[in-house]
Length: 132
Image (tube, rainbow, N blue to C red; front, side, top):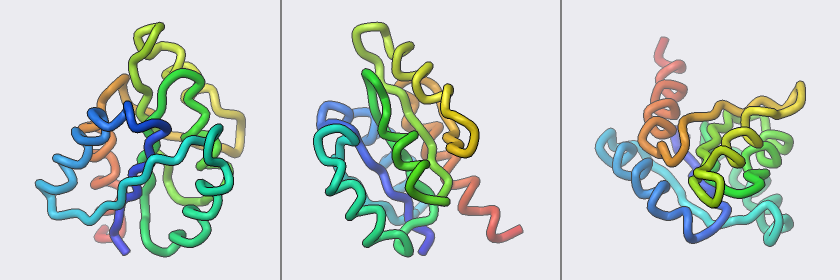
């Protein structure tokens, strides 16, 4: 199962995802990448999370603007969710603040703006917890 799901809110977030993918591939860690907007594809996102709940152990959610994607995913799963805010009109601060302000009961770990590398490294550390 040690698979990482990488979910992008938009195809324009692919460069950030590519940074995470590079790290996961360097560590021979299987992953799956999907573009599923929390706003434009909510039913498809729900279906993906339900149908693949046993296929991955960690979810990296990459989003900009309102950056609702990580929080919505965290509200629908008990898997660890790592949010990656994407730079945009407000240099990514809007997305960053959105991700770190989750309500109680909806935890999202958040890395720096556009920092797909750290998201993948954090996912790898989470996966290694099973070995301890």
